[in-house]
Image (cartoon, rainbow, N blue to C red):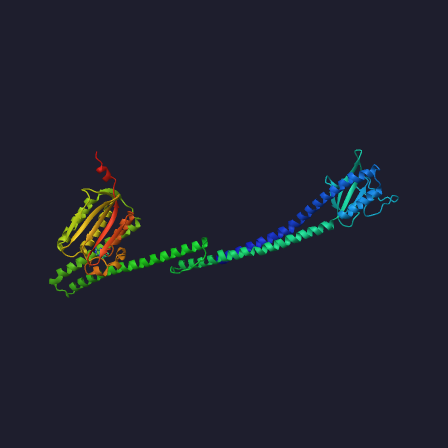
Length: 478
Ligand code: ADP
């Protein structure tokens, strides 16, 4: 593809050069020659008419002598570089600036016929056989008493016109050669600005097509080519990043599935071959049960994340009372709170507070945040779930006085499968997917979630939701 594009352009260049050459050599000479002949004929005809009116007609009315006219016309003929003749309609030569006056021996121009011009006022021929080569002849009639008495004929050698024609043509040929040479600049520009970057881009796309998404290249121009190259580079780096993420994701998933499966397999095998005595079966079956719960949780989280991504986050937004949802979620955790002697304190704005969001998904957000708060809280502590109104937003905070999150981990907790080292001891069942689900849900609502945490002191997760207009209607006194 690369070679043909360049060849095509070079071919186009040569076609241009050949056609320009043909056009200039074929049409320009004849057009220039015609134009020069016409111009010369026009100026000579004007002279001939002047001679006819000023001198020749006087000659026929005997107002002026033949010698006098000859003297005048001789010098004019030299000036015009032509031969001036006065000829009778019968063809008899009255006066000829090329020859002296000879009254006795009259010269007759055989077959003299002024209508030979056929409606025009000039001809290009051998002038009734008087010349070896073609001459330009203009005819101006001499009239007296409404009769044509004779003709003023000016003959001009064509070789003189040819010389000026050739001079003009030489200039055209030089211009043509300069134009063709200068257009090589376009070829150079094309090579530098289009062909060379395109070669780089094509090579890069070949690399990408063969799977080398990490290939990097640079086109240093800020035109469309540069932009295309930058876009391609960006696209490839994004795909490469996506591939890396996917590899990491699969590695994480496999790892998280393998460890519970290995322990389940190990315990069951040990129970079957008698390594674990029957009286300890219950203890180990409980561990196996725990591991299966972990696997179920992991599978459910993966399915939730997958649904969030594939559906492009189709939200089923409704106006609902968030206070009721918060209370219900808090109640769900009564059992686990009792085990750790944790109290959940719920501080809500108003009896009812309507928000506009996807109820099911927000419930999941609250569930994940409260679950984390309990998991990472110390025994006998308090978890606060609080709502605050600001402008048209409602801010919901889930705050614990637990282990906290190290500063360097705070950005990473939103990543899939991320679990801080600090939390591993506290939470063996964790999947590292809970907060990425939370973030996806909140972002899809075009809202924000933040964490404020101090290691060893506790964490607070705050997210916003848009308030519903139902709140204003309820506030309005009826
Ligand atoms: P997991 O299911 O493992 O809890 P999450 O995505 O919900 O996964 O959380 C990721 C990590 O963020 C946790 O492993 C923990 O290190 C940290 N984390 C989340 N919530 C809290 C919290 N309330 N207190 C301390 N650390 C937290």
